[in-house]
Structures are given as C-alpha cells and as structure tokens.
Length: 265
Image (cartoon, rainbow, N blue to C red; front, top):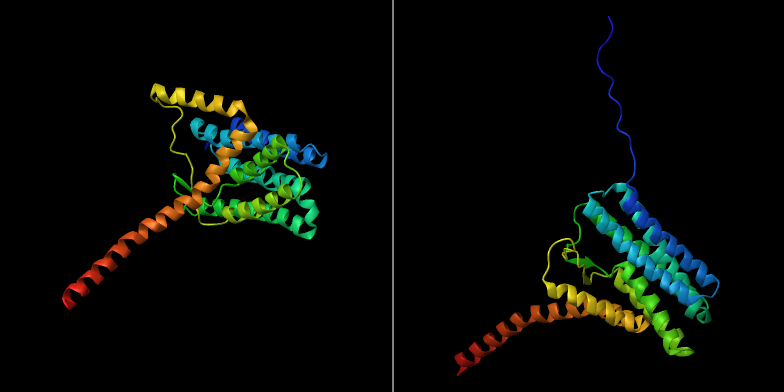
C-alpha cells in the first residue's frame, strides 16, 4: 500500500542581504584602513575607520527596523568589528606614533587589539546568557568609540601639525587608557532609546541640522571634541554616582556625632 503522507521539505537557510551589506562595507573600510596605514597614508586610514563606524551603526539599526536580525548577522558583525575597530586602529596607532618605543610600542598596539577582542567576547557572552547590558548603557567603552577616538586623534594632530615627542607620548597614553576603558566596568550611554522612525518635535530636526553644520566647519577638530567628551563621560558619570552614594552615609555619621554631643551635654 502506497504511503500518501506528504514529504516535508526542510526550510531553506539563508542570510539577510541588507544588514549584512552594511557590515561588509564596515569590514571593507577597516581593511582599507590597514592598507592605507601600511602605505603611510595615515589620514586616509583614520577616515576609513570613521566610515566603518558609520556603517557599523547602520547595520544593527537597519536589522532591527526591518526585522532581519539573525545569529549569522551577530557573528558576522563581531568579526567585522574585530578587524575594523581592533586590528585596523592598532596598526594605525603603531605605524603612526608607536614605532619609536620599540617593544613597548608594538605591545601597546597588541594590547588595544586584545582588549577589543575581550570587549566583543564579553558583550556576546552577556547577550547569549540574557544578562545583556542595559539598553541605556554599555558596560565598558564600546570598541567603535575607542577606535574612532584614535582615528580622530590622528586627524587632530595632523590638522595642527603636532609632531615629535608630544605625538608619540600622546598616542601611547591614549592607547593604554582606551584599552583599559574597554574592559572596565565603567558605564557609557548607548543612545539606543533614541527612536529615529517616530515623530519628534520640530526643534529636534533643527538641532540635528545645527550639529551637522558645526561638525562640517572643521571635522578634524569637532569630531575629536565630540568623542573625547563621550570617552570622559563614563568615568565622570561613575565618579558622580560614587559621590552621591556616599553623601547619605556621611549625613548619617554627622547625625550620630550630633546625637553623641547632645547626650554628653
């Protein structure tokens, strides 16, 4: 007797092209940055890292807006981030300002690459275990922000013609500081709660246009200022929280002392 049970076809597996296209563009820009650094075109290498940051910000938002998030996209994005925001800025920092330090210089470049990998691994682990970071804050400095901070430093120094020991020691300090902040527990604002596809007051559009004009006046300076403020915002926020948490305890101790003086009197 023939079996009339219909044969179930296995669902075809595929990938979403649009968000992964932005991820590929970020990866391409990161690779171009490495090529430009090796050829000595440090300005071009720095701008390529900034372009990678733009594409990296778009791929996740496009995937969420279009409902095309996937496990493949998450893994591909992490690998692209490792190249664009770990290896590329590490090579740029070494070739641009760390070669003169010898072993200390290339170890600083490696430290930046290693802490970027650790930052990405921690983020992925927390996401998979559903102990994800708050939507409002990141734990540790995001690696795209750290990479762009290095890139804008290169552009700023080139704009003002800063050379010599100031440049070398400046980039050395920045590499170690950024590496520490990436793997620290310092919280940074994520801006994920900003809803771009919903209605906003007219003043919001005016503010965005004014911000674009300010950045366009002198990108090398304004972008550096924007990202140095963001990098410093984490430690400042943590300091304010620590001080505000200590104030009630100090007030209670003063009350106890006052009570002790009153009983003695």
